[in-house]
Length: 611
Ligand SMILES: [Zn+2]
Image (cartoon, rainbow, N blue to C red; front, side, top):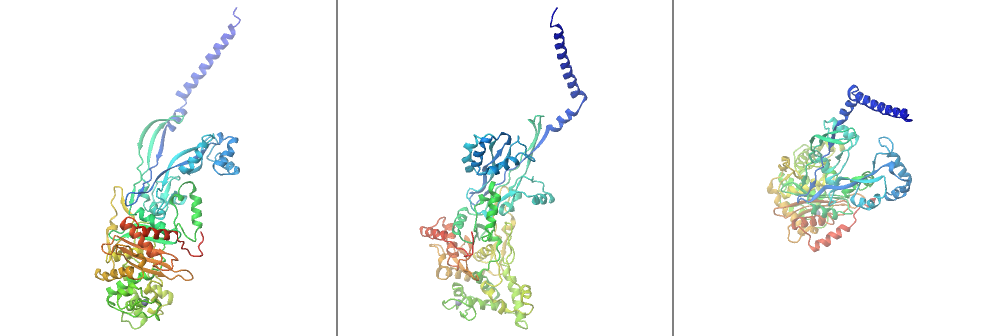
């Protein structure tokens, strides 16, 4: 008798039963119940969005201004964090234990679960990452992942280039409402400057990939793929070397520099001071740095002054426009002389302004009082009020042909129009028939109610350099595979005939050689310029200079505005001169290098300014 006979049967039965159970289950899942087959089909086709890389930005000589940079996101896996590593983590990332506890909590709640990694530091720079990487290798539960962000190899032109930032809810909804479904809530979008202006070109086109995925989440097969189209690269008109010099010269100062190529309207340099390093507004420190820059509001470092600040009074550079209009109107000739009568309006001592050239050379205020009076009071109305109204109406129309009082149409966001005072403005201010020339004469010397932006001042220099016309100032030079917009190739004529410009140009050359702008002279180059000193109640006056060079066939026209710079020839004239020398010669002479270093180190601020 086999003592194990029964037991053997029991074991065989158990094995058969298990086999049957599995067979039935298999039969049930495969034949009877379709839930699993549905489920498998449902999860097997997966679509993934492909993000296009953003276009780069190059200067006029193909130097990279905005490119890509590798940055690192730091991830944390809460379940793998060991108590003993806490101190090391806190030291590495400069946080308190309490902060780290919060990080762990955040990484374990809501959408995050403790056994899935989540980001806790975004976009560390390569340098920052290099410092921590030997240590994080030793910590379980913390690791870094590389990704691509905006990079600024030259760290210049921050206002002009602008910045990008993660799209906010409003922008997200607005783009959708406008039929633009490009963005997901994690995407970046251009907020200011060229990043905003050319967003649609820079961002590229999104692609996608469809693939089959098994139940465990593995990709089995790509079904189809539409590759992302990278954003287009822009070449802009800026000269990086010139821009860099301009930013150095305007260090510790408030104001702007705009340089234009008169024959094309291309912007060669656009400096807004104070400035900031564009890299500050990328990556992990964005919010912190943005708030810090915004709080320095007494200096408004985020404002692009050249296009945005249209409240600048032009001062004596405006005398050039008055002279041109007066010549065109026939109320003066180049030989017209007036006395420098300081009883009418203040002036300094200088040779008698017995012609227009001498009046400009010495920037004679009483002379231009008389010029403006002839412009405004030339009508034949019944009384001085009516004559003034008619005169101002005509004058306003003519001034506007120089690009004042309206936006020029530059390809940058937030351009402001400036202001040319007119009849309705003074009617509102003083009342109808309650103002006449004697009320508004300060316009004659660029004081009073006129407001212009630095780009408009530079454009004035370009108009004179071109003897009467300008091209809309612009930043874009070329867009990959696309032509420059036609609107930038149109000549805009001022109301003044070309023949009237010769005397103005001669006078501007005299200003630099023997007049108020001698600080702008450059050895071996004939420079034309005009100084301006803008009154600034209770504070130092502003220093203004517009200029172009060489005198014949000008290649650069420039406007410099140094707030609180006391007078035109003191700071604005030498800054303009150094910029032109550098651009035209390609370098600065040793003498000029010393001058540049001195200007760079000079601090010129309103005494109430706070950093
Ligand atoms: Zn005078």
